[in-house]
Length: 54
Image (cartoon, rainbow, N blue to C red; front, side, top):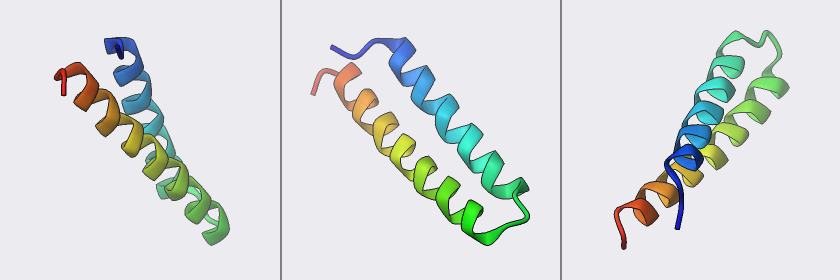
């Protein structure tokens, strides 16, 4: 079972990656951070699904 801290960690990772993408002056870095954010968003969705018991 996924713990709430796993969900919180994934949410924080997504937030930080999106913030870094927003602040980066380099397009290659922005793309990389957005890919990281998407992976974190996937982890958020999986964690929420597991916590809901599905």
